[in-house]
Structures are given as C-alpha cells and as structure tokens.
Length: 71
Image (tube, rainbow, N blue to C red; front, top):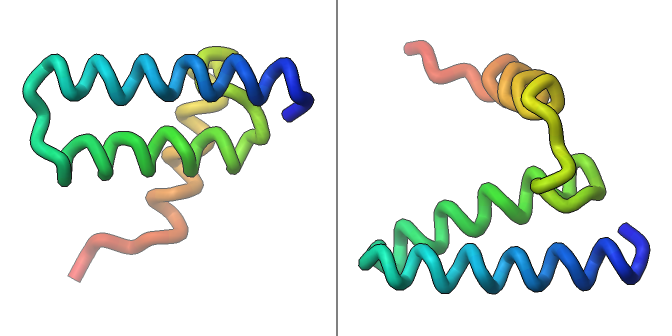
C-alpha cells in the first residue's frame, strides 16, 4: 500500500476496533475479527474496503483449500 492507502487503512481499522468495542464484543472476539482484517489486507496489499466480492470469494476459497477442516 502506498502512504495514502496505508493512512486510510489505519483510519478504517481504528473505526473497526471502536465499533466492535461499542457493540460489546469480548476482547478475544475483537482480536479474532481484527486479525482477519489484517490478514486479508496483507494478502491483497490493499485496504479491505477496496476489495470486491469476487476478491473475497477467491480468498476464502483459497483459504478453505489450504486448510482442510475435514477429519
């Protein structure tokens, strides 16, 4: 991300944390949700608000195929 995109990401990330806190989410839930946002942002090297539905579907399909949850 360039500096402008990085700044936007940080502003949105802080809003995300504030919203989760105001919703009464537990610290472990806030941590898990926030980690997911950071991972998606790092994967695409973009702020999550710029991702399309197709981007997210591809990401989660890749995640499912790389992490087998079946016994």
